[in-house]
Structure formats: structure tokens, C-alpha cells
Image (cartoon, rainbow, N blue to C red; front, side, top):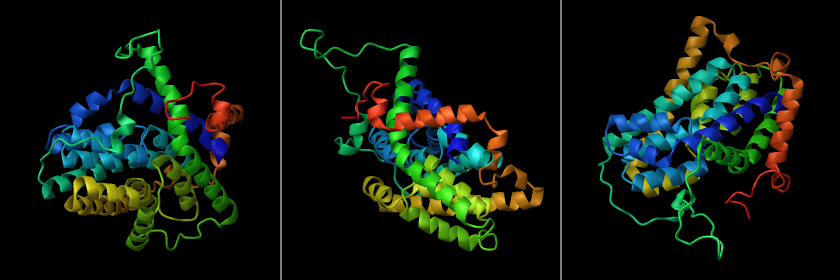
Amino acid sequence: MALESAPWLVLGLVAAGLIRAWLPMDLVSRAIGGSGARSVFRAAIIGAPLPLCSCRTLPVAFSLRRSGASKASTTSFLIATPETGVDSVALSWVLLGPLMAVVRPIAAIISAVSAGLLVGRTEGETVAPRKSSPLEVSLTVEPAPCGDDSCACDAKEPAKGWGGRARDGLIYAFSDLLDDLALLLLIGILAAGAVITLVPPDLLSAWGSGLLPMLLIMLISVAMYVCATASTPIAHAMLFTGVSPGTVLVFLLAGPASNLAGLALVRKELGQKALFAYLFGVGGMSILLGLGPDAAIELFALHELVSVDGGASQANGPPIMLSVACLLLLLVMGIKPLRRLILPVSKGED
């Protein structure tokens, strides 16, 4: 499972780092600002590929809100960003199959837009200037470090070219972003490997589809904290045990977008009505979107496009030496003392 995932995870991290480097946050703020359906749709489209998990999405979204974004567009961004991303889509392609890799980001955008529009209908859109909170600390751009004799303390950091920004993006991807993913991803891969090894295939095939399993998975997902990338190996194991692709999609949508800590902050920042609309949008749309793939797979016989082979596709995947090299790269970059020998110390590290 780890060897099969490693090349695609490296590819996803590289793409995520480049997106972060080349997509200015001021452009994101301008695109999401304002009110109306267009801003909600733009927020979902922009948020979907961004390499942010739930813990990093919250401060970004609430900072955009305090900069003038409506509650509707803030909600759309808050849902689309953790539900999917270039790294999770790359991993979905190999672990869940091409059908789920395509359906997953589309479903994330649909659920985000739906919830955003619902919040817009139930809430008045007034934005008052507010003081910065600890949530926004991670968005603050720190000035360039100044030595006693090298520069003035009020000097601005020189603008970087495309190469320098790409380098910073890759450093972010293989340090801060990998740190966010590493523990949960490790747990997900270990859990998936254990299920595939010990649990009989199709164990839950009789109970893994339909409205009731989807409701159960949605309730379980609210109590979990799982990011889009780390949820993918778990979703693969669910498919292996016979859970339907639609029920797995409910887990992939509801898990990253709703957890107890995040919901508490949504209530505090957006209000009680927005929280109810948020939950109804995420939960209701997750189930509706989950019913669609199950029906389409049965109607058009698309079972071969969903990966349930328990990792046997490695023989048809990248060369084994490439997989080993990528896995070693992830291991080295995931261990801070080893990583410091290769990369500069990031701002978030001691």
C-alpha cells in the first residue's frame, strides 16, 4: 500500500507546492470577496485544488471573511478546500480508481457551492471590520529577517522570481504540508493494510450500500478528524470490504469537511444559522452525491473503474525502483532531523 501510494503522493505534493507558490493569496481574496452566486462558485473552484487540510483551511477562510468575503463564499471555500486537493486526487487515482478520482473533486465543488448558497439564503451578508485573532496568525506574512548591520528593520523582502517561488513552494510541500499529512496518512495506510490483510473481501457487500450505511458513515465522519489525503487509504480499505463507492464518497466528503473542533469555530465565526445550513449542506449533499455513483456504476457497469484489488495493481503501476525511491524520499522528509540536513528550517519549526 505504501509503495503503491508513494509516487502519486510525491506528485501530489509537488503540484500542491507549486500551486501555493504561484497562486497569490491577495488574488484569492479578491476572487472570493463580494456576495452572490458567482463568488460562491469562485470560492469552491479556487479552494478545491489548494493544498490545505482542515486545520489550515479554518484560519485562511476566516481571514478572508474578515477581509470582506460573504458568509456564503466563506462557507464554500471552507468546504471545498479540505474535501479535495491535487495531492488527494493523485492518490485517489491509484487507490480508488479513475472514476472516484474524477467524481471526488466534482462532488466536492457541488457540495461546497450548495452549502454556500444555502448559507447565503439563511444569513444576512454584512461584514464588519474585526480585530485579528490567533486564527489569523498563520496567514501573517513575516518580514525578512534583518541582521544588525545587513539591512534596515523596515526593509521589504525582495520580490522573488518564478524559480525562487517554486523553490519555496516545494519546501513548504515537503515540510509543513507533509507534517500535516504524515501522522494521519501513516495511520490510514496501516489501517488499510491491516483491513486488506485480515478482513475477507466483500465482507460488507450486503450492508455497504444504501441510505442507512450512508447516514451511519456521515455520523461517524463528524466525530473524526481526517484530511482528504489521509482519508484515501481508509476509503480504499472500505471499498475492499464491500462498502459501495457512493458510501465511500460520503466518507470522503463529510470526513474532511466536518469535525467537532471545526464546527465549533464555524458556529463562533459565522453564527448559529450558518452552522445549521453548513451541516445540512454538507450532510445532505454528501448523501445525494453518494447515491449517484452507486446508481451509475450499476446502470453502466463501471465496476472496473473503481479500484478494489487491495493493492495488486502495483504490477501495472510505476517501476518498483521509482516507488521505493519516492517512499524513501517521503520517509526522509517526514523525519525532521533528517529533513533539516536537506532543506532549510521552515518558519514553523523550532
